[in-house]
Picture 1: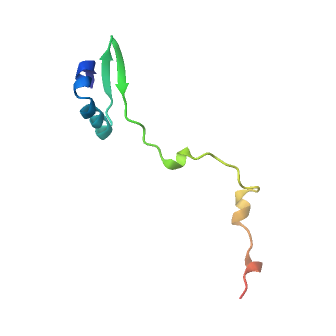
Picture 2: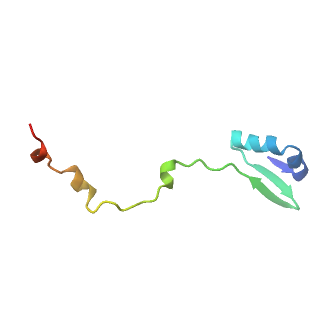
Picture 3: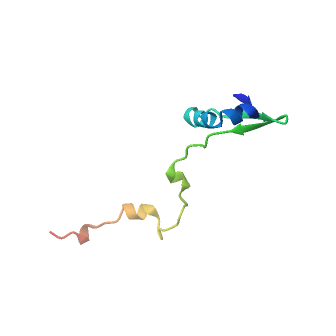
Length: 73
């Protein structure tokens, strides 16, 4: 949707709410150039985590540990 700066000024909060609800960006024409108001991309919280090396061994070794000697009956 292409709007002028005066239309943006008149309906700023309505237009911003519409962008957030629909996800459709708004284009504003100012001095012959186009500016865009774009909603933020949804990201998963897990993608923000930093990768850390906390294991001192191969993870497969942990899967195949024999714990039978530790079990007491």
